[in-house]
Length: 353
Image (cartoon, rainbow, N blue to C red; front, side):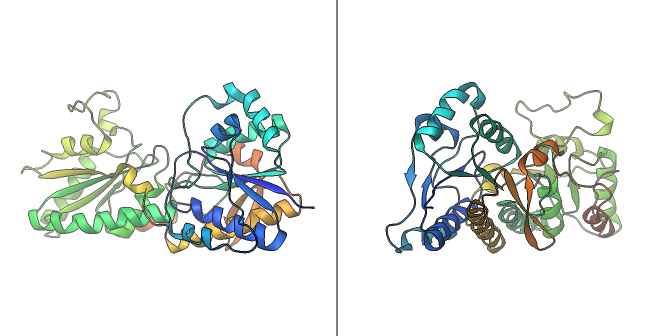
């Protein structure tokens, strides 16, 4: 039976979303002769009963080939507003669009909201994980993470030369409100001297001692510090959260101010907040491959009538988990005793106490 499939991207954008769309449209069209439509701006499109035609007439799929190396999402996305407050209108919109199944590409927050809607509306739902924070449960890969790590490493590569030229401490603040995967992966790959993540407590004195050791014992006059945006204040300041003196103080600036006078000489620091640069760019080869496999297998699950599943990457292959199990599971955080943390410590990186 010919099916009409919807696909939407929800939450923050990241590289690789268009790769999913390309793979799903190509496989659905070539293999099953199904129709695929995009839902613009996630649940907003359902609310307004809007669709974007994605299936190409006949077998001419050249129009979607450029999606392989395009960042962002051609369907648009939203990550704000009280979606469930408009549940009735969204459910009515889904019914009016007349979909046989829906593929959602999103993070854990989006999965939770849209899964609630799917239960209310009895939708046939397939979920694909994407997040540069790498915190969706059960999956070893999420679309966008690898590209974001590469982007941060590229920034570190550029900043190292300036740091070395001026004997400076360069502080790079990266995303990661609750999970430190981005900071940990990019910090190790980029050769950072200090990595601060939400999962591991740290002290300013510990950072200062490490910088002093680098300078006096190892004759290294510059340093790279990678800071996740979600770190807490240091343990010394735990009872005094208003320690930063800047009007708009991110965690990178907080660390810069705290370490400025932490040794017998003034430390020259500079702070770079990468912000949304981490979400941009052309998807890496790994993100393209992961997204393409996810898009293909999502269509196969629909063909097999296996719904209410999230795709995940485990042990070198794609597996599935009930979406409710993913929602009920705590986010995937950095294990403070895990191999990557131990690797960082063995390389002489300060990563907390």
